[in-house]
Image 1 (cartoon, rainbow, N blue to C red):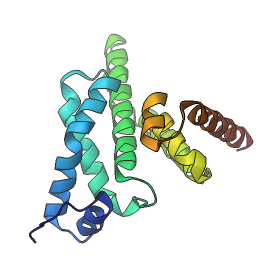
Image 2: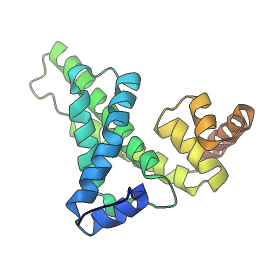
Image 3: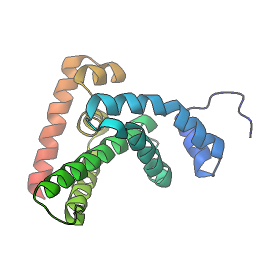
Image 4: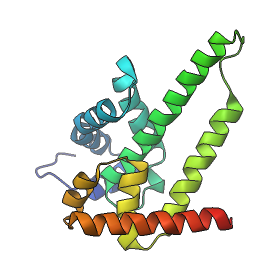
Length: 179
């Protein structure tokens, strides 16, 4: 298929769900540099940045049917990158700790499973928030964006954003305590 226009991300996701290789390629091209920049700014993972970008896209493309088009694709993609980098950093720090303690097996499936469960639980709780709180919470808690960047992206005043994130945090805390 030849594209004569630049479809939006949601259209590309729909095309990718129908196994259109060009859609996968366009999504990769469109978001690769931003992910590289995001990972370099927020995570100290050395030379593994490009690897983490491809891990992120691999996870996203394998789970594309789980994407909720009510939200921007980039928000979803960056949350996958965020969680992937945290998992990578945890594994790496666990390996360093294990090696210093002279353990023979640096892999800890239990730690990995707990981290995945915690991430999944947080994402599930954030998805239950009212839309007015959901996107700011996702961008702040999952993507670790700065308040100023989120306010600019959502086109709302900074103080309004801070109140929404504060309320989202309070609601999430109540839900976590109640469960």
